[in-house]
Length: 52
Image (tube, rainbow, N blue to C red):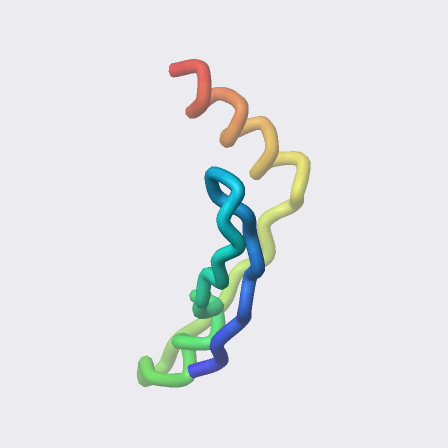
């Protein structure tokens, strides 16, 4: 799996957060498919979830 380094600063201390891309895991599932969701729909759902 691909690991992405994400440097941050927490309480004045420099840290390195290691992240994996969720989409990279799709290769481990047989017959997996992907769907395309418009960004505008995602943003509105995220906004509604935040204020729920």
